[in-house]
Length: 304
View 1: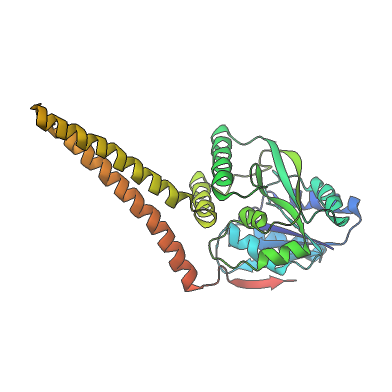
View 2: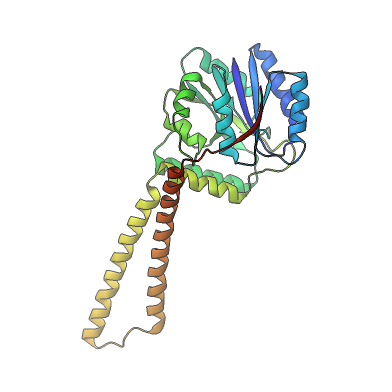
């Protein structure tokens, strides 16, 4: 059986079209399946529509959160409740085509691969979002050393063994594509062109995307700390040269450096120190968050 995990948040406009395409795709595969929708505190008719759909098709399962806990928490809840031998993960906006699920399943069922990622060889998002995503993937890949990340998102299918491995990682700050790459196993990808959102507006603002990127980099890499170290060493070298210049000026009788250059030096050093404090604060906060050991979500009701 295939479990299809889909987090949703205020998606009343797109759900009927999404379900039609998934059911059509699965019908061609002639494979038993379940669709697990995780409602992340929607405020529109999303939950009502899901219940209507479930009344007509009991293969639709619903997890209702007690409030909005975020995209990564919703994905995690769906994965933890999936019962299939193969588990597909996709967003609800139809930017990732459900028709590719059959190709992903074909690559998994013969046992040659354990994870199949959707590889975006082209995308129709706005230019700013495309540029930011490409930059993040490049930085994350170089900083973390993980493969199978660049130009991939959540759209994927994994087997039960890979899922069990992924679920052993219990950290509170989560980036699912990073975790999926971290577990290893035999991974491959399928290329596709990512479409524009089928209806409505994206629930992930640029601020949200920046926060997700920060979580990914801080969770999987020591790059921020290493960057601070190199920045500090560079500053030491620069001001060593400046100190030599001041000393030579004093010996040769040049006029003393002016107020402007002094203030620039102070501001520069202060900025470096604040940057270091910010990076250390991020790591301390994440450590504190892990030590609290709070659940990353609460379920109000389940409909299985």
